[in-house]
Image 1 (cartoon, rainbow, N blue to C red):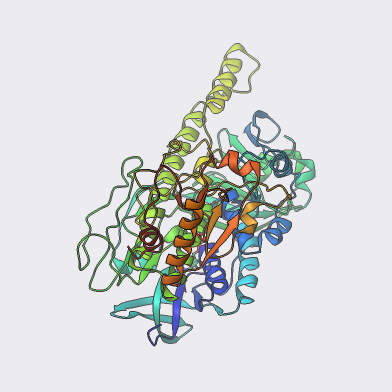
Image 2 (image 1 turned 90 degrees about the vertical axis):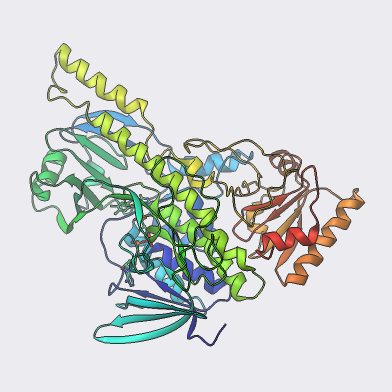
Length: 582
Ligand SMILES: Cc1cc2nc3c(=O)[nH]c(=O)nc-3n(C[C@H](O)[C@H](O)[C@H](O)COP(=O)(O)OP(=O)(O)OC[C@H]3O[C@@H](n4cnc5c(N)ncnc54)[C@H](O)[C@@H]3O)c2cc1C
């Protein structure tokens, strides 16, 4: 630390900022979160917390609380398309209940299942819970009603100005992380642009209607997509007493629309509209995720360029040319880096994975063992993932537009033309992938092109990930998330891995060369002061799923940094690479 007030200042106390604060606190890094809102608000937002995000929350010790607060695991998660009102369902798009995924997760032990399935948890339930956990985490301070209004980069860090009421406060921090959402002040101040798509704004309402769930005319589901003269979507919230209603601008008032789609199931006076607003749907990606002194906006390597439109815009190189230099002090995470505000839109899930990547890199750097490439790798790893997600979400949005365009006014008529209209729409909807069908993006992402992943020439590739993200294939390919497996004693391997690096030792005892090499690696980590644990894994499942790799080096975020293949790199060079010191 360099005489600053706080090692890490986090602008934004949404899901990304609060999760980053908990992670840093648990890694022994003091931090402060400032959020412009007086308190987390009860407005509709994310509702699906994906499997990878839940695995990350499990490592932070909060997944149980979140699951308990979410929609019951037995609740149906189907999506229905209805014509005009919920009385007339046309298509039931079936999704397994969380309880079914949990049960399958105990049965299937081939690396394909997540350790934690997703949960339906309204963002307005999630945020106060995260705030409570963050406030109870040693070293973490949370201030709501405090807005970051400006900052300046200095040689040793950042000087930030925060406004609380009429009071201005100046902070000196070693690092500033902008978790300040789609309209990020941090992103704007760094001069970073975004590219992608801003879709038509929509209206949304949060409606309290305690009896409706039991009486839903189309049967229970999680989401009702209504086609017709007044298209809209009704989304069940986690306590099954609140509903989010979304509709294009114009059209009848939200109360009238709600009564029209629910029909006789809802009487005037039996519900209350708690919140109404307009909401800009955005699927955008920032040109960069970081900035440093002297106007040095970095151009990190490794952007894979998934889809068109997300290539780097013009970049001002920092001192030393391409790539954020060691002086980079400001980072973006979550919607600040990739505004992804569409329903079911993965925005929350990728925001949580961003901060899981950034937290240990900040901690490693502040603790002194992380080299300059460690923080530089954050953008190289996370930006391509957001680009891939946004490309997939744009495709899902286009798919929705296609099936919705098949709506015809005669769709409910008992005539040959009506039957044809129904068939056209149902077939179009069935043929499309939906935005909730993306396990490959939720947990199948791999950090290709990262400066801290050892993908040496001797490393077998393990197959390519599905570029569209619809399939998840377990692999220990360096850069991938270590697939979850149950060990012979019934514990998940993930739970045995600590907050530092772990070297997994699959049976190597008869191989003296391997034992010697393990000692070399351990000694190299000690020289850097980087945390490394050795964990022996004898289970047959591990040997099968991990495809015969006898040594697997896993990072604190559970991504594979290196695995033994045809060759063994120099142990000191390997430790230097994965700790960012190469
Ligand atoms: C209707 C809707 C439905 C969605 N559904 C899903 C879903 O089902 N699944 C999913 O994964 N994602 C979904 N998303 C996207 C998801 O909500 C976002 O991706 C997620 O909230 C991003 O979290 P964040 O912490 O990065 O940003 P935010 O949640 O936007 O939090 C940013 C925080 O920064 C604060 N802030 C802003 N400026 C400043 C400043 N200058 N100083 C201090 N604080 C500041 C704000 O007050 C806010 O609290 C949905 C979004 C919407 C709008």
